[in-house]
Length: 374
Ligand SMILES: *Cc1c(COP(=O)(O)O)cnc(C)c1O
Image (tube, rainbow, N blue to C red; front, side, top):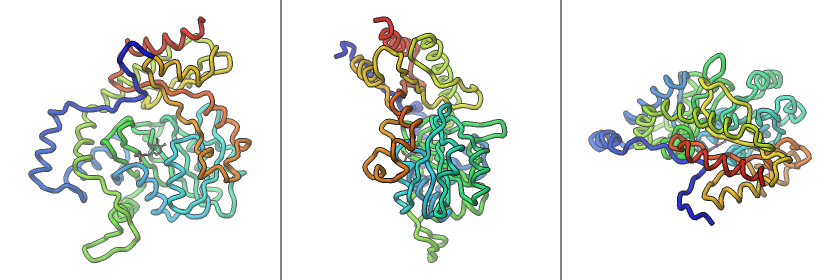
């Protein structure tokens, strides 16, 4: 057991100064509009659109309801091709719509859905592809779109990790038919709980806005079996305040990423993911691969760090395809997913969040390096 009581978790939610939130609360108390597209909700949709560089955003109560609604809005049915290497909400959103997930293996370099393997998994029942920009690293959006176009499939990106990520042409969120964000406490940008769908046009956003409000289009008309997916004014106000600090938070994440890389350079058996461009990435996670030539196993390193008060996470282990509600699917068989199986066995996500200081990074990297020297 650790003698140092300090515990370092994989992430720590980013919180703005509390006193700065009070005026926002006072406004809510004055207006008495607590939800249903109130002033902060409208402001946040506008502000996020500007910040992210996308035109149409529908805010949600969380990312999972947003995923479920995104599938509903496009009337996706049958089978959807997706990745086993993600948080379980990705596939759960399919099951909640009565859709059969079809798992396709990931690419070794990006750990995202491997476009080269998608075609072989398409059947007459396939209606869509649901890739994930895992760790905020962009999918091969061009290749995925080419396949979707060829087979007339929709593409819904689970972009829960990809807040603020861009490519040469602009926001990564502009790709596909829809992109879904999560603003959960653990994510790069948080509203405690929250999420959003990035829509290609105003008409799609209107349809999604109806769906997240029970299908109401007026006081007396309901046009679809919608759900309650609305973001409250409290969460939206928090989002407005968080936005003031997001650039600062991202800058610190970028520094931490660089420090980790420097300190872990040359540690035999530890491999970092390829470095990303600072101006277009969000450094949401810091995954390392514990390779066979590292002196102890990934799980032993995980335990060793935990014994010292450091709590990295094995994102994503187990694979989604290993959970009981998916295991029986033919596509879930480990033989179908060798790259994902290997990644799930090697990966460890190290703590990364704006308030992590260099001394803490030093403690973490020293412990990792020390195992190599025993
Ligand atoms: C966090 C996350 C979700 C779910 O978002 P919530 O806002 O927590 O519902 C979905 N997919 C991925 C990949 C995530 O990391």
